[in-house]
Length: 112
Image (cartoon, rainbow, N blue to C red; front, side, top):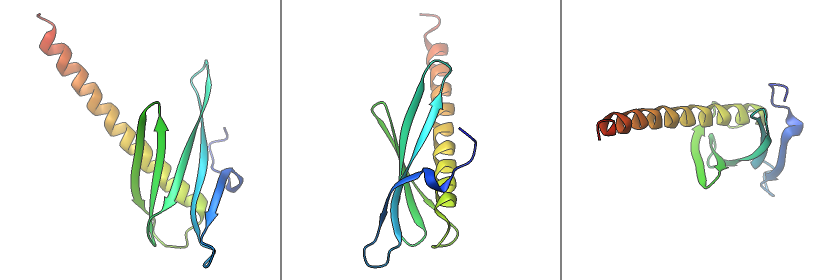
């Protein structure tokens, strides 16, 4: 993992047959927790001129979010970067909320 997204890493590209515009691609996110290396396929699908969807499956949970890019003909590496940032932000928000819920439940039941 080199810390950068390379064009060759954007796989399974799909193009509109008439316009030849990219309508989707995938990126394999390699996660190394020290014991295991796990690959999470992340799918990007064009939803509109400047709107894309990013999707990742973790265990039985599907993360799916829409995001916008500044221009319709932006480089696909930048589309991937915007999508991965969106995914990172949303997962971060979920983790924070789960932590708050965990603390609240523990606080409520510690005297029981």
